[in-house]
Image 1 (cartoon, helix red, strand yellow):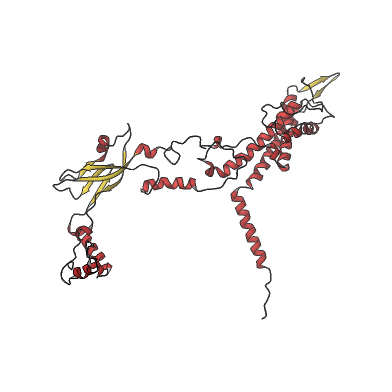
Image 2 (cartoon, rainbow, N blue to C red):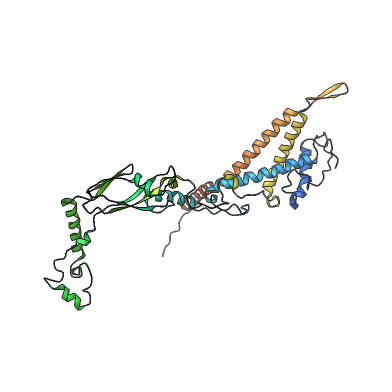
Length: 387
């Protein structure tokens, strides 16, 4: 097809005449393409005035308008649902998918706090043990880590839990009535219950008797003996009381600082092809034939504004055109100002309409509707029933 200097009112088929060909196979798009070209040309003054554009120019504007419309729609969907989309697969087309909100993003945040509280999470807690030296209270866990924890260069440990406690009171439990005194043992053996330990008299005495005795043992240890405790400052451990002559060992749990601070550690660690940001959410170009009349009207108007802007840029190449005996001034400035104003207004309207459909706005509207319905029902007179 030879290039035409001006629009002649007979556009070629749109298929194969667009820069990218995003929608050229769509039947509805192929039908609307020539109509949109004539629509835009007519709004620019054709056939009363010459329009220095051809059908390919109009088709370029049409393709851009459809793409802009789809981008605005899907960008809105991404903003409204991103917390539910992050971490999902990039291999699926979400164009016609209803996004179901979920709590996974909140759970993921909660797991980070759970890691610090030792109640779950994604950090690995390692076990370690430290040999206690008789009568030595101070120990450097950083030095232990460098020698025993297989740390990467520049890494260190975070001590999470230390197991340094006195033995439980139950191992020192004493029942004066067991097997003697009232001879409860013989009575219990009669029923086959005599093998229970450490005491069997609990079957004859109320439970609080044993609980009070255990509490008494623990309080006695706390008051009369050195209380088992420790102090940890900058991985320098001080234990109380001082280890006896037997020494022994102390168990603890720790995590590695580089693992704890690595933002990639989490439920998606090692996974690939996942949504990580706005750019790889799997929305594709909109399907033109599925756009309703409201959306197509917006596209026609936006195409017209783009065509007007393109014509203004073309006419701006020459401020005036000489004619026999005079000059004609072209209206570049008017075209550019009008086109850019129309484009901004159309985008503002589309974004405003989309904003009214957010989940938050819909819930607020439903709440207001429920209040209005209740107010209406409250004003309906109730019948008086006479039996």
